Image (cartoon, rainbow, N blue to C red; front, side):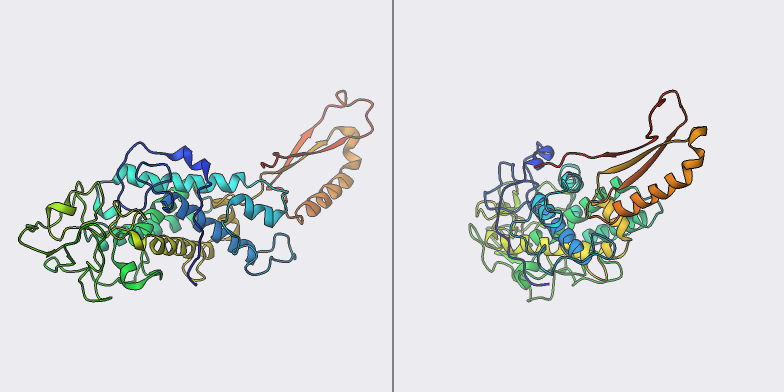
Length: 400
């Protein structure tokens, strides 16, 4: 997959539902509304939402909306500029269906993504911090294994599945903000991350200096051999402490995370930091790599869902994928049928007509997701009426 070119926008007010009160962060900021977030910063919320929408767009490009129907042309959906759920559904359904249920599923995943910072902010392995790269990768493998196990059940718990996806994507996205991968490889994802049975590049040894001291804008401060080792910054307040070296006597040491909430950036060599959380220099020593890190995190989020071999969309049924992201319709077609004695002779015709209606309804792009049958037997209630069968469609009004 080529490099994603994304214009930064700030148009997701629904994320207001998931603002946390804490002010610290270990990688990309949770959402656009924190005190440290720059106006051009990509956050976990935006990275996750864009990635999911691009994955869904690819699904719609490859999946006929109706049996035997045509599919959208390649790129017509995945190429939507500044993609939103509404833009995608307007293109797919010509305004005939609300994106509310898809948006609710995305918001659900985003909330669990953000909650990792709330629940595990001081554990380095949840953030690829402190050279806990192998440990973080094992967490990803375990979450992915649990997710697939759940989704392979006959009746999966989709709420639990979205929770696991949110956790997985949070840690995965942090790999690109917190390690030296972007500095060595540019905006190219690392597909091995989180995959069981695949070995990552080795982590720098405990006695290996990884950075040299810097202040302000830190350029070329990573000193490991090119593309041979992985490292990540140590952050104060976490369970894994940065090996101390007197910054007055040493210019080399382990890398710091950096930023205003990391004390190690000045108290232990190597000073400075390598995080790419933000495009604001005071918050991210490698601010100039922020956009590359965010684009790569989006690219890998799409890969997580859509890769032909490893993407979860191709490892479960189409129906389960649609249920997971609530792509199924919110419409229900309800049949209310009189089964009283006087109608018995008409039942074969009623059944045939009902089948015909269901067949017709199932071939339209906004087909109902549920078919409900209700019977009654009360001639007095409908006395004198010539029509004994009522067909009702319950529809939710499309949102603008």
